[in-house]
Length: 180
Figure 1 (cartoon, helix red, strand yellow):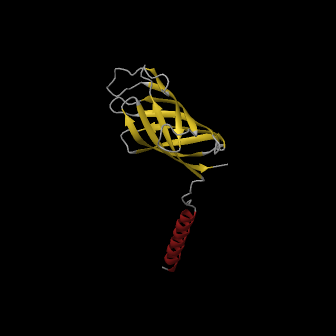
Figure 2 (figure 1 turned 135 degrees about the horizontal axis):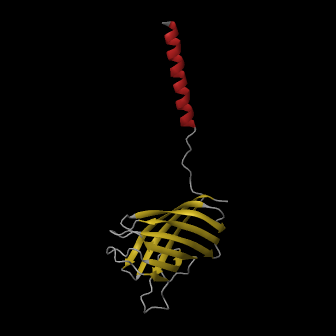
Figure 3 (figure 1 turned 90 degrees about the vertical axis):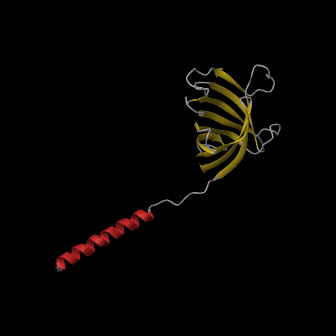
């Protein structure tokens, strides 16, 4: 009987130690080392507005569904600190997106924010799925150069304005968690 009590106490003590070590090893939530709030402006070329267009369709949509499936767009879009299209750009978003869902609007983005302002110099590389039906979407920040050397983080995007196929504006809330 005494041996059973000793074994039971040993097992309980062992379980207590394991639980404590697993709780102690959990990492606390980190605060971002840098945060940016930016606005991305896209003006799709429709064949008539060459002077103002910042993006162009380079591959047509397929006939699979009615949601632009397969359409590929390349862009060189201005990025501003506020929501005004004519504000001085702090960066350019250069990359592409394509529509990748047959039965709903959904796109996949890959682009580089190229900064060349007095505040920042360098690039941020961003990519991921834009689930357009969601209020906010998270894209991965997968690297950078200059002031953003080897950074990682999350870019939460939200559609701020949508004017059909011609113009849309995205609000980007960028939080960087690895800064060097």
